[in-house]
Image (cartoon, rainbow, N blue to C red; front, side):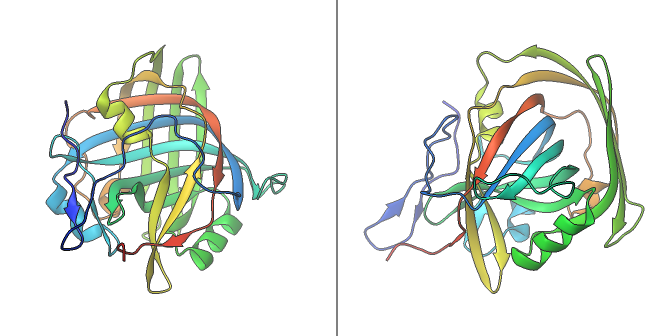
Length: 262
């Protein structure tokens, strides 16, 4: 069995274990604050030393690992119909392209999540709102995806804030559907929340969506500056995982402060 992040002792007689890597959990929150759909996602992942990741994570969280290794992800996709609660998506501003650089975290309550080091988006208004509310590191960028049969090309050029002109271009070929994901494929995709630092607190923002429909994919070309701009080592060598998904509908619950058990 692969080894994941070990349990952490939080009190004299109490130890909190990380939650299972569950590919299809029940929704954990009673009502949704945001709804959206993620489409045409490509996931690239590289192994990274947890010691390099730890200083980049919010207080109260630590690197989540598989077999003693953490991972950095470069994910390109289309955000569709971003809106409040279960209501309709915001016209025009709720649909845009996004490319994010993310890490994997676990907090003192054992909740596994992602930590975004950067989120480039092709609409300025969502960038401004996300930065002002949850202090998420959104950036305004020029972005598009071109499709030629099973070949997808994602392009991104950062506009604001800087460094302006930071670029990424990745080309993948979509392959067969994944019927039985590997532990690594589950580990980097079965994530049901994010950790972020805002207003002097570390917050956990839970999400839920149906089980991912995943396809294996082949990386044909990568010319990326986003990972290094996010304070991580630039990718060296091929990714340890390349995946594609046509997409899922997503709900986000209200954020809660990260704290240790009483």
